[in-house]
Image 1 (cartoon, rainbow, N blue to C red):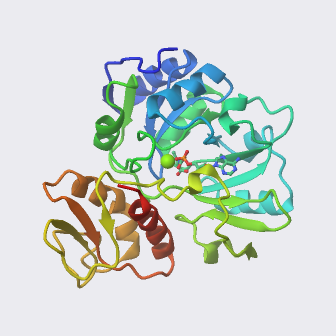
Image 2: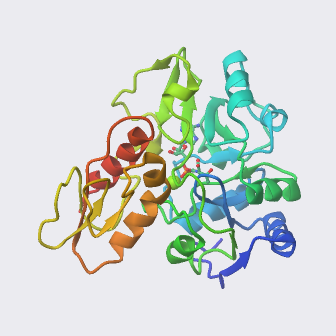
Length: 314
Ligand code: TXA
Ligand code: MG
């Protein structure tokens, strides 16, 4: 496999014909960008190691970073992972939807080792987006899918973000407009004695309503690395005004050059967070500043992403 395999990347509006194209590419072991309710994913046949390798190649992702397996429903998930009562309860309450569960992998799971980067655990979710669900049904197999961005860059919430990051490196993008939540799925780890929140996301800790081990500083998953969500420019947090050379992303009363939400709504801010960061990255300004975001509800996930973006080394 050539690491820089060149493709003419096509963008097709999501419809029956595009779906058939996408399913054909998946069957041939190629990755396809597809919208989910969180962010655009780069999906490939999870049962085919080479197909999975093409995901890592297209993203330029470090090989050790394991991927999320996407399935249609709980029955399909139970072929891949061991579910206890708590895992089953969470799946029943939040699937299809933006919740990923990290569970013990079944030894007979029909997925390539590369998907889990050799771990004995597997991250799995049943997505809600009609395009991703249709692709899962058409492919008839689990799909491994990280966010459809080059490694270390911002997750894409529009087909345009995908083409900017992976254009020429993948054959097809299914375009169905903006993704709904705009933040990657909440990840809950159920492989230890107590449930752990591995990544905050659209499903909040309050909504989960389960006892969660307080988050530690220990690196849990490679995806927890500080610089995982990084724009190319330096980022300053909790900014109340712009310093010279900065592009200020506002929130609520802090107007800025652009805003996450003029009305100060966290749902609105989450949905456009990555878009505002992409936009800021594209400006002539040399650095980015972001107004304070309240650390409650969805604000926790937003601040988590911003802190990671700000932690990137220059
Ligand atoms: O919303 C989402 O989850 C999107 C869409 C496409 O579904 N996907 C996504 O995938 O965000 P990705 O690869 O960008 O992030 C997956 C995260 C990474 O932080 C990875 O380290 C973690 O899940 N992960 C995967 N398998 C794991 C495992 N077995 N144990 C712990 N963490 C795991
Ligand atoms: Mg990602």
